[in-house]
Length: 292
Image (cartoon, rainbow, N blue to C red):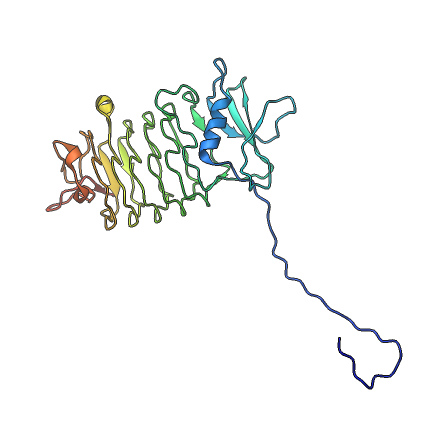
């Protein structure tokens, strides 16, 4: 502080006023990456104790319970996971009500070909998941063949770029509501609905495919699933935007029952190119039906 040269001697006081702008931070619970979660979920099962349900617990596990940690290293809270063999439920617990899924939630509930662990899961309660930061949902529910319903109404997919293989092999699902899905950033939809033999209709009327480059095998079936195939209609509001689509091999492979809204189809659906990603109407063939 500079003082005047002619200042008389004596005691002086000065006041320094400080002001602060606070940026409040809310601690959050963040799930581990999808592949790590998958490994840890499967590790809960034994030859005699199988998982049939998955849900959030309202209370922390007792000290005697063999719970494992499934939080990301950036998480502010622990997330515990354990199996209660009495009700065959895999419970997870975190102090906050919501748990943020990892940006990479790839393979989270994946059931690989020939695997036995988690194949008996009948119910997934995902209502406490916040997916607003997720970019990768590839193969998220791959092979979950025992599930008969899947509620994704709380899923925020506004940042997702990869949905490849997301629902592959979910042969017992009879309906799938994706009306809340934001696909405006998705680039990969390859094999997204492959092997879903029990759906009779599929409503993709809200899908934005303007950024998609890969739709290989998107709706395909394997030969072994042809007798089970029930898919007859795919509903959309508009033709798919295929401006960036480069990979579109065998999108409708073995979908023998599928018909466009005007009755169009191919004897060999595997040969359908991207021109068939349109609403079927007089003068324009396509595998889609305009949503009523």
